[in-house]
Length: 393
Image (tube, rainbow, N blue to C red; front, side, top):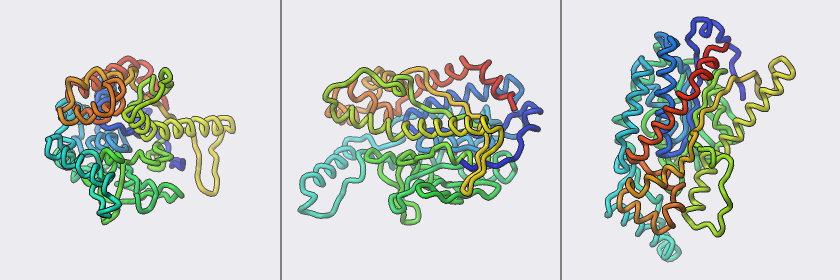
């Protein structure tokens, strides 16, 4: 968890805090982050904390968080207006803007899986790549995120850097794509950085949930979702130099603490639990690692330097949903999923059993708008605490 030692005292004295923003993945759950970010920028606007430059100096995201981070980085100079546009994007989104939902495409994908699982040893060539075809996602990102403006905002000093991560099947490592003003790099055993100009392919790669979505090729290298085998999801924003960090997760309270025991779970339940592990477990472990290092630095009353890294106190705050997102998905799924997707999930289990899985692919306004509202109210309810934290050097 190497970090820069530059002081942020002057920016706090002026009332304009500089934050590193870390956004986790979670498919359609990313709409929660949009609501939370809108409430945050609204509070900062009302408290006169927004200067000429963005208060978010470094933006880091994986999967759906990469979409949100890139949208903020490419947005207008007024961060509040950008947050409103992000909310509008999520509030209007439809499943067919993310993956193909027509019967022909779904049937074609289903046929490939049946062929490979049944006759794969005979024919040899594998056809199935994923359960869903995310060709529409490219258009959504290309039209929604003007990646050309990211470079302009970094060059002007409006933003220090943007990072989004993806898993490289070839290198068996997490690759964090970096676009920064000052050189930043790291080479660890399981994670590396790659300086680049972030474009749609990097964002799509970060969203390629294994099995559900197809992998994405960048320069003949295949990449999967940035949450996959990502042992340190918070580290990029730390490497980029941020010491005051706001992490926005999409994991509800029951998903953190566990639910009542389930006997003989079906395929849908197991798939939902696997996705929960993919997106949440390493995030929680990394947060615990940061807190542990803070305790050591505080006890020693000084930064800790080793041959590999420099450790300093990190002012970390985490925002999570106050409600169980899977339960919300279960309530909305019956009225929101396209018939073809609903049919596919029905074959895996009941509405209750498929709720967790649905919460990742339910790109439907009745669900995303509910999460936007939960995110907005969660942050608003913490206004006094947040303002005190933001003003604290």
